[in-house]
Length: 321
Image (cartoon, rainbow, N blue to C red):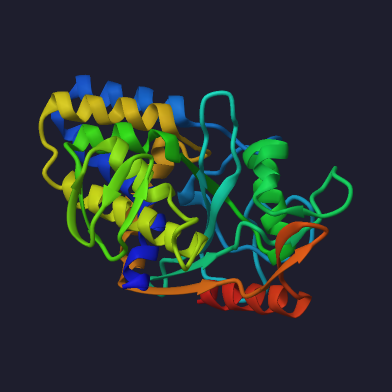
């Protein structure tokens, strides 16, 4: 079940491409709307111009500062194999938020495979330009998507060509646009004055947002919250299969435009949807292993250098031909 749900975070990226590509068939008007939305969500990394996916080749993994551009490799990396950083940000009015969900999606079209590597948000690291230690999810707060990408690149020693950031605050609007979502709840709890009984539930946007945010009453803490977020997104994708009317599509485009940022261009999205779709045939999942610990009154996840090296090698192997 966990494997099935974790793939949703890669599909967040793929579904944007599939969605935009499919509705283009409705005609010039919708295609113009799609193009406008793609332009609105586009945000390049600082100092980096994205290369179209069709021009991407393998990358030699190293510890160089700028690893976002992909070049020729002597490490046996498959042509067009790429890493995408997926960021789930709990952004609210007046609060930029932190990237509480950080997953590296490694896509290898040659193997028709993907590897999803989850990074605990409390991972204790040093972030460029800031003294002392910080939680890895603070990189986004300190320096937006660019610093988040740079920080993950540094600690996992991998190149990241693209990122996709999704604002969890927009989840409520997205759920309402789909007419609600259905989830299977396995924990009786109350959150934001909403009571969630065990069993199958149909949730409104506000209910789904509160459902996906609860963690303090969950024995699994953040891990349980992440599972609920994946479940809501999975349900959204199921609901999305029936979206065919122009008004609903335009409403969804508005939600996407207000809550997603990425350095994927419209052309990149199309190629991701078509050339990388088969990567879903073989999915592996891994969560960076660390030790929860309180230091100076702060809750951290301590990850050893050997674990960082282990994860680096796993990702490297997943990208090989």
